[in-house]
Image (tube, rainbow, N blue to C red; front, side):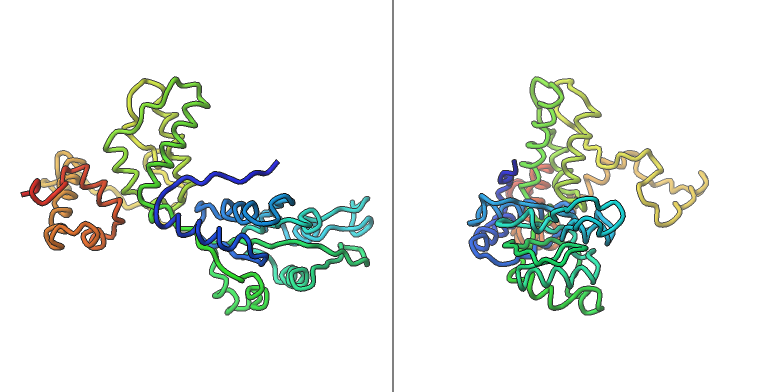
Length: 336
């Protein structure tokens, strides 16, 4: 049975989104949830349902990108016997199954225009007809849709219906990307690590080293929470239960020299005699020294204002705090 999902995090960006969701939950209107892949759009829809007066009704989900147009049509609106080859009995679509509750439509931007028109009719009139049927079926369903696409831009190109977009956007909830959630990254990483350790039969999770925590802050996480979970579980699996803190994050699981997507050929390796004799003997140490130098410069230029220094370096406040702890830059007096 579907239940309200737990949300882990304390950041301002996340709390702002959750407050927005709480205020919208009690308003029985269609809501659009936006955000990058892996930011928790389904969790937002889940909370919109279970915080609403429909919480005892069904919460039905459908990924619009997972089915071709003909199957998506039958899954949404149902069909009658004989509607097409293989249709031997009547079939309730997701709208009918969601009657009295909420229907969550993920990846809405992939829905074909013909189905968008049928969806608009259900939203406007609360009724539909099954494929191959002639009887009107009344439904009482709240629509929560999600997308990472720019629907207004698609509508301007004729790829999405403006009238449907208007009906779906009583309000829009944007789920923040992970790199904007600061300290939530560590909370989530520890949550995923503890759970994976328990599932793997470990006696306990020993934690992360300071360098591993710094790497958590500094990485951009393009895949957001979903990518973070994979990285944490992969890193624990690779190291195994040896009692030592996790020192290395395995962000890229691909073998050296191979990446998941190669958009251009790798540059040829220069001949040995062309290598710069002044290359650092220890690249990691040199990079950390340069990182510390840039931090000091940014703090000096902003009179030790950490928020302004973070803005200069394109970091969040929590990220620059993590790097300052890493390099021991806790105050102006210490740096002096």
